[in-house]
Each structure stands twice: as C-alpha cells, then as structure tokens.
Amino acid sequence: MNERWVVSPGWDCNAKGSPNLTTKAGYVVTPGHEGTLVIGTTDGMQESMREIDGDQTRMQFGPDICAIFFIANDDMYCRYGAGFGDNHGSISITV
Image (cartoon, rainbow, N blue to C red; front, side, top):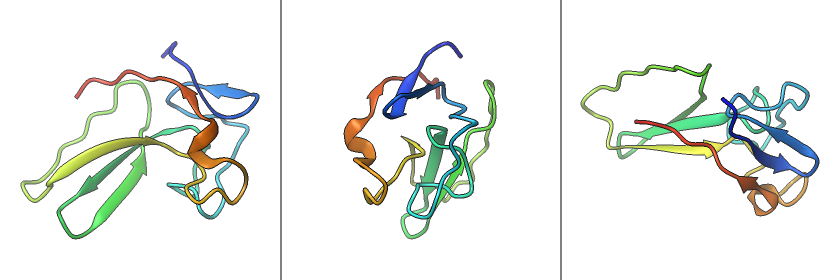
C-alpha cells in the first residue's frame, strides 16, 4: 500500500489510516483510526460500516446486500474541522 491520501491537514496515510489519530464521535466508524478505508453495505434498509483490515481484505456478502460503498474514516459532520472538505489524494481498490 504505497498510495496515500490526506484526511487531516499535515497527516497523510494509506488505506490503513493513521495510527496516531483515533476517531471521535461523529466519524464514520468509531472506535477506529482517522483515514482508514471503510466499507459500507446496505440491504436497502440498514447500513453497516466497518474499517478495512489490511492489504488483502476479503469479504463475502449475502444475497440481501443491495450496495457496497467505500469512504475514508473522517469527521462526517465537521465537528472537528473541515470534514471531507480538506481531503485529497486517492486510494485504488479492486472489487
């Protein structure tokens, strides 16, 4: 994982997030690490999100899953700064 993104000014990280920045209330997943790649799933009614664990994470989904999505673990409601507004960089994934 040599691709990097920035979710907090001055802190770049890979998809495993920053081990120095622990998430707080209002982040996508808490407890967790800021900047970690999060996978979200929905069955049309309920949403579930969790941090990706490692370079080669494998997951299986049941037939009720309508959608999967990916997001950086960041401040969703701008409680601690600009939220997603100051993010830049990219991470490539294969589904």
